[in-house]
Amino acid sequence: QVQLVESGGGLVQPGGSLRLSCAVSGIIFSSYPMGWYRQAPGNERELVAAIAGDDTTSYANSVKGRFTISRDNAKNTVYLQMNSLKPEDAAVYYCRTTYYGIEYWGKGTLVTVSS
Image (cartoon, rainbow, N blue to C red; front, top):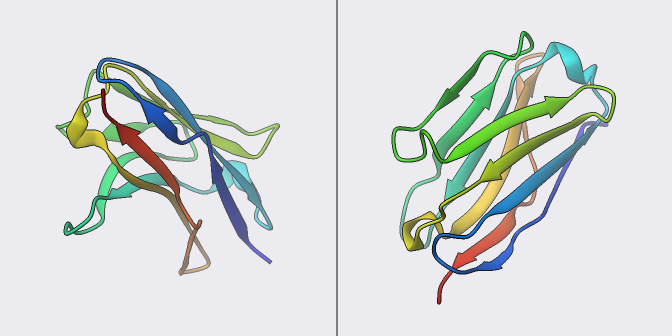
C-alpha cells in the first residue's frame, strides 16, 4: 500500500523558514519522481517543486531561489526547504507521486505565513 505522510507545516512570520517532509512507503522510492503541490483557499492546486529519480529538480517561478526540494532515498523521504516565506505562500502543501500510472497524494500539511 502506497502512503505519503507530510509533516513540518506551521505558523511562520514573513521572511521566515520552514522545512516540510514527506515520508513515503509502499514504493521503491528512489525510482520515482516526487512533487510538492500547494492549494490556498479559493485557488487551484499548483505544482511548487518536483524532483526526478535522477535528482533533477524543477520549480514554479514564484518560488525559484527561495524553495529547495530534495530527497533522502535511505529515509524514503522528500523535503521542501522554504526560505524567505511570503504571505502568498500560505497554503496546504501536499506531496505526490505516480506509481504504475496511479497518482498518490498525502493528506497535506498547513503552512500559515503571518505576522
